[in-house]
Image 1: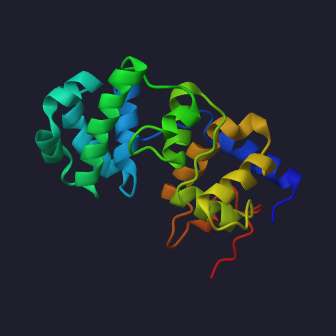
Image 2: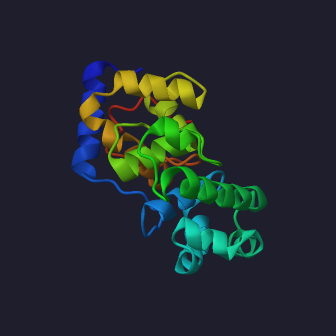
Length: 209
């Protein structure tokens, strides 16, 4: 496991390499970001972006989404995994935003988790990217890298999240998830990680097979 000084050095390097990491999901406003995050569960950002580019042209707020209707919505998102269930949740979520939140996205993580289709990971992503909260979202990339690099030995997202929150200096929390996600996509890939090209190579606890 990495020690305190190594963790600080690791995220200092991330900050130098990519000072302001950004999500790769395409969105137009707070509402469309929430919908993109909902659709991204068990789907790649690229797959989501392919459908939302067209979807958001006709439905970029809760009212327009309800007017679109469940059947037309399913046609837009049918290439995304679990599209039937996600389409239902989008409709329910839109209805709840209108009735309870005056069509606004709640900024509190606990309130976000009450929205249909939004679990803890998604709520963390939304709070972090939209409202600059210091939440750390743990997806498959973050979980894998946390174990590989030596940030956590835990095996569940919630336990890894707790480990990261406790181990990483708070000054880095805002960008931790995006740094690790992007690093997992393009450098520390699940298969054949590019260890010799990695700027964290000397700190990482991963042993090349």
